[in-house]
Length: 133
Image (cartoon, rainbow, N blue to C red; front, side, top):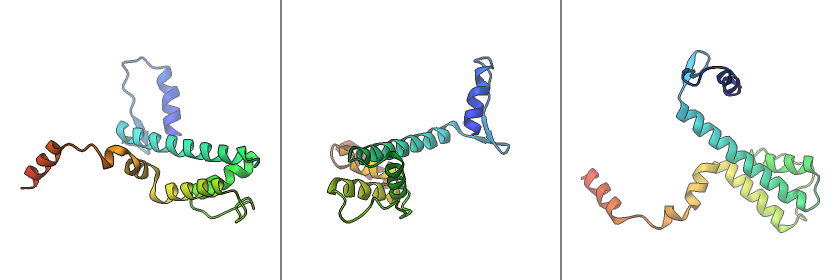
């Protein structure tokens, strides 16, 4: 809420004005705000995408959002949509949501990036060995 207030506040100030984000008189680092907003955006994208898949199968939007947000938050609540007779794709979506909610979104996305597994340069490994030696 403080971030939204600051955005509107800065709208009326000159561009050169320095107005840091404060929460309870403590200044919040812009880098920290960037990380928080990235996480919120990724969480929202996963939630909307998952709910959209549910809606494609004919489930109403309220139930779709509830089911997917419950899985993403690993709460275990259900409106009755989740069952053993549910289509396999929806089961996979819920499994992915539960995994993303439990392990966290950003570390799991980093783990799945091809660069994490392939493409590491040997010079970087040599530098790391020199630093530890």
